[in-house]
Length: 211
Image 1 (cartoon, helix red, strand yellow):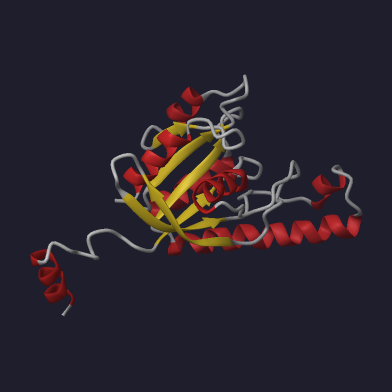
Image 2: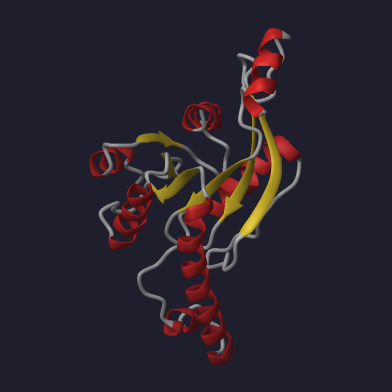
């Protein structure tokens, strides 16, 4: 029956099945790489509202956040609709003492560590729901980390299309070449989510990612 309607719409030169209407696009990466900052930037650009809170303290985002029906348009007239999924930062080790060093009280630090651990588990589980993923990496840090290898390995195991956003290129220590050398199998675009640098190229890469 669906094929019948597809053929019918084709004859009528109107085909609502010709573009994917409800794609889940996930933002993944280690803590403090800029996922939530990028999520806010995308939502401000296309919805005029923010999505997530951000902080200099790791694991500010500790639960899955979803923003539905984001509509992208480019200069060529192409349109893309997707749900943006901002995930908690993935870490191979979460220690409440790290939060103590940030000035938190012991009870608060332990609670945050517990929530952050659950968030990591949820992030991995949610990979099975993703049609495509943007991995947000801090371009000032060494990409050859256990966390990054874990993230990329999980994505490769599921054959999920990936775009790597090398964030914080506004900083002098940023080194996109090191990320390209670490993950040559993926397209990589350098951005500054905080200042909106190179977002036009980023959005074009998103179009290429979700075909």
